[in-house]
Structures are given as structure tokens and as C-alpha cells.
Image (cartoon, rainbow, N blue to C red; front, side):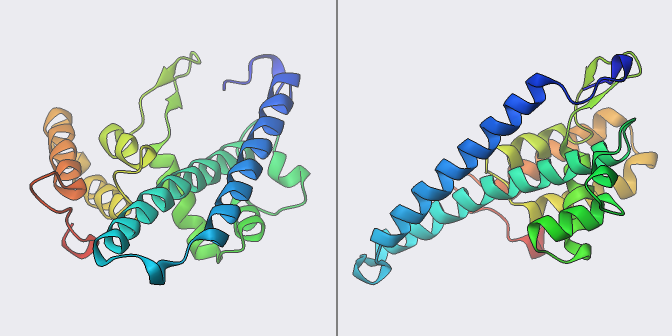
Length: 193
């Protein structure tokens, strides 16, 4: 996303915006139609518990999209053309809070986490890995919730300046594996992460 030559709003970006709106609109309509047909009271105990697990996995994917978009709003606010100010908002935090209907505290949390999980760009414009690649991958595929990701990012960032980067990456991968769980072991609760 480097801004070479000052051209930020291109036809390609407009087409992507239309695609995003269409896809999210279609997903919302499909979810609404599906939810209207579901009645949890008729599910067996086993099916009810499976539905809880599946609903959580679905919500995690939506959360991943929300933090990704919040981080992009912040990136656009600090870019060469401030799209947030052009839309009349004083800051990225204000824009995210207003457009998503959350508090500014929650908007700050989404932006901070999204920035930690988003790939970046080098000075030359080459893409770089996210600061926390294992956490990013787990959040984006729905294996790790944003609450657990936030706890992990905060903890890893607190020790990053004192730990060898290779060790830090190994610790991140191990913590993600513990947090997501496995076939033999339930995921850790956020309070335990």
C-alpha cells in the first residue's frame, strides 16, 4: 500500500470497496436468513454445544475483520492523504468508534490490536510480516479470539526488548498453540492466557 506518486484513491480501490460492501452485505443477509430459521430450543444437548462452538468460530472471523479494518482506518489517517479527516472525523479512533457504534476505548483496542497483527511495509515499499505473525494467523483464521490475542500481544510486547527475537517468536508460537487448544486439550480461557 505504499503511496508512490501521491495517488491514493484509485479505481482499483473503489472496486475493492464495492466488493467489500457487497460481500459483507451478502454475508449479513445470509446470516440473517439463517438465524431466522434456527431455534436453539429444539437442539439436542450435543448439537447445542456444537452450535456454541461454531458460533464462536464465526464470531472470531468477524472480529478479525473488525480489527483489520480498524487498523486500516488508522493507517489511512496517518497517510499522505488523511481519508479520515476528509470524511470529517478528528481521528481514526473517533471514526472507528462512530462508524462501528463502540466506545472510543474499544476503538483504540481494535486499532492497537489490528496494527500488531497487520503486515507492514518497508521503506522501499516491500511488504513485511506482521509484528506477531503466529497470533495474526490464528486470529485471521478464527482459531484465536481477539481477547486472547490482545493478552498475548500485550505480554509479548512487554518483554520484547529483553528477549532474543528468535526466542520471542518461539514463545509466541507456543502461546498461540496453548491458547487455541487441540483435539486432546481444550483452549485456554482468556483469564489463563
